[in-house]
Image (tube, rainbow, N blue to C red; front, side, top):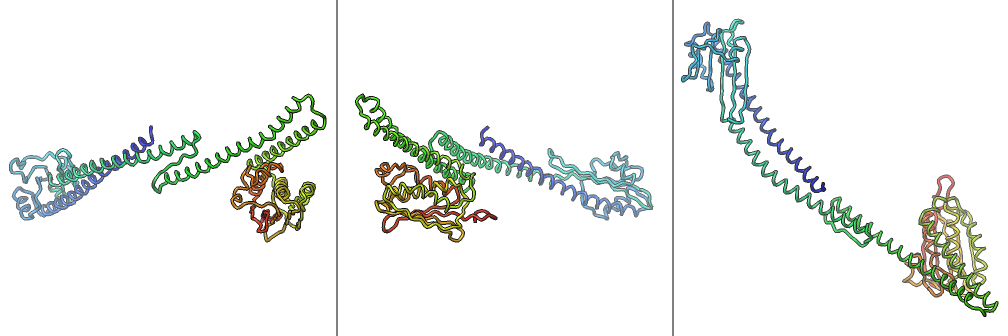
Length: 470
């Protein structure tokens, strides 16, 4: 069963129940009000007549008729007065008078026993109220007779019937309009849901460019907006994934192709001398090292994406990690004729992964050395500033063009591709730095030096033993 059918059925049932209530409740209330009014009027009239007749010593047809005429009571359909034996003494019905006969009415018999009786009913078929009231005539503690009043009221019944007809007509009108409105609303709602469902199917099929246009400010519109935001992120993620796979394949294919070419050259040559063979073997080893570096960096990025390092966070002394890292880079700096200067303050303990901190400092310093100029310098400065530890790595190298600043943390992005490949760069170092900084609760900023070169600033919250990172 579709949502539209369910909604239409639910609203239709609710509307039907409401219309039934509207048609029944006012009629019942009106009928009860009329019955209460008739009970009060007839019982009051019967009491007045019985009290007046009780003043008589003996009930006779003449005395009863005289009292009734003097009272000038409100007209009813029929009025009977009987003596204590049940014989009718007075009857307002001249055509079928019961005077002289005995009354066999149950209400009259009850009144002669000393009880007041009243009953009223409404006939839907006749559209009239039928009321009966019997009152005993008592004097000196004994029942002298009884008064019976009968009323057949069609005027009040017609009012109730007219009200019922009006309610039925209004119910039919509003019920039909309600059904149309319910169908339109249900169709509109289900159409919007189907549109959203179709968009989900398209996204599930791989079309991340799908967007949903739903007007309004209700929950479905908000859900559609969230869906569009989600698909936008999926589209961006898919684009990054495809570019990553493409770039990774390209980077891995280059050293593999070189290794294949060099090994084929050695295998297919019968006259290659020893020095040439050793040179080719060294080149193969160099390309294998490059392939290993790319693989290791890809593994590092995979771990960062999986959040592995976050589960291993512990208090780390940044100065100690920086000192060990700079010792490893000294041979590279010497071969590049680049000077490494450092100013490392104490009391810079942060909550992070030691391996991630090594990756951050090593990659920033290594980039500063590799992409520097002969005779240049790399400066590493570490200082506590307020509640944060600030690491600054600056170099006097080739710098970063303004157009490339926003992309340097993208994976496989390289400013100078020719120089990057020549220096063994893969375009993954800064991506690793960026992801490692974020994974450990830090922040990183890059600035261009006016005199040439680049400045990277990394900030981490200082660690306090009692409360953790401050």
